[in-house]
Amino acid sequence: TGLLLSALSAQVTIDFPDFIPNGIQMDMYLMTSPATTPELSDGFNQTWDLSTITLQPIGTLAAIPAAGSPYAATYPSANWAWDQTVTGLGTDYTYLDITTTAVNVLARNVPTATNNFTDPEQIMKFPLAYGESFSDTYVDNSGTSLIAWVYAGHGTAITPLGNFTDVVKLESSQGDLLLWNTSPLYPIL
Image (cartoon, rainbow, N blue to C red; front, side, top):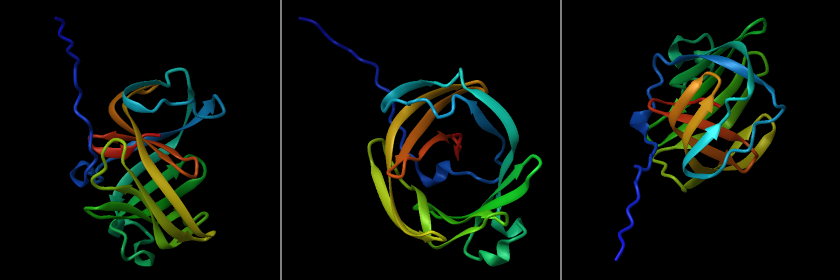
């Protein structure tokens, strides 16, 4: 009689307490090679080797309280903003409404190429477990769109900037791919 044992890894469920935007500041990079993001496998306990991609530093991103940003009066329901400064191009803001149940985008690229959402776009829901999905209908400058997101993978991302463990892979029906660091929760790709 044989006994088969396997190591079990805790499933990472994303939840509101994981989102600690105050004080998060990071450098932003543009992937210059290859031309597109390499294929990243779905599933749990994945290792995504992105160590051979070439990155060029382009600026910084900071999560700040929306009230401390220059366009806060235009977006009174925003409680957070991503302050994105691109070297040589200036600063743009993404205005967010973060609640205990979701992260919603109210505006992007403010003021350079402002895209206002008259019906916000949901980019994260809480809680969200591996294999779950959510969808959202939003209205922006281009009109009404429907987007569906699926929590398609979890694992470690190996990058030229170091290794990120407990990373969640979200994919959208519009072809978007986001890798989220989970502790604290912020997008890394």
